[in-house]
Figure 1 (spheres, helix red, strand yellow):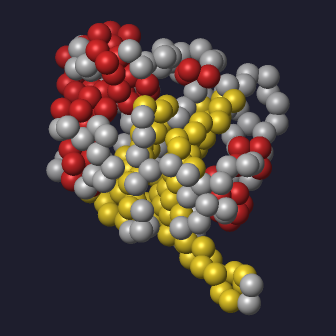
Figure 2: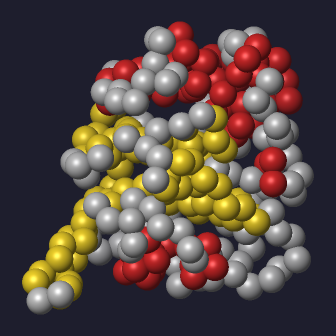
Length: 263
């Protein structure tokens, strides 16, 4: 079972608290049948990865994943391998410069259309592909459309620009799969540059919540606010559903916006 989680908060010290708060959505424990887990996160301007491409059935907890991860923006992924073997290079999230990316679903007829997908990716981006997954190719295809817009290293991108790049990515995948007679692929994806988080729903149902938790700290109330988006079958209490074919955007101020993939 795969699971994809995106998290943006106003504090760097409460990721595990948020995961504990959202157990109804993410599960009491990470999926026991997942092949691997990974978390990508932002910390003091750095983009960091923590991965475990395990296959031995060892138990894992949310504490294991979030331990020693002070961050206000993270993408978490639990993988059920469909394309690519059990290596760190095939374990989500993937990183390129300031960008993090994770995906659930499988690109249909990937072996057949892989060459066509890579034809749209500049050589300098192709050289950063380390693994064998359809997801990493999908990530670099998205980066290529950012590059076309001279926005690969832009720190602040408006949701319309990001939506346009995501739309171009999915459209090319759909066109190539259609050419070989395959149906459209299931694509749920989360991506971030540390300033904006985007979560596309086109596969497993996806939902999000906006929380404000007050706690007493040093004699005054301290507000902990976060947005969490999760791919899971049922919307838990307090969650809104991201309709299929829509993209949720979360800004650094935790404001949210939903844009259609169709434009």
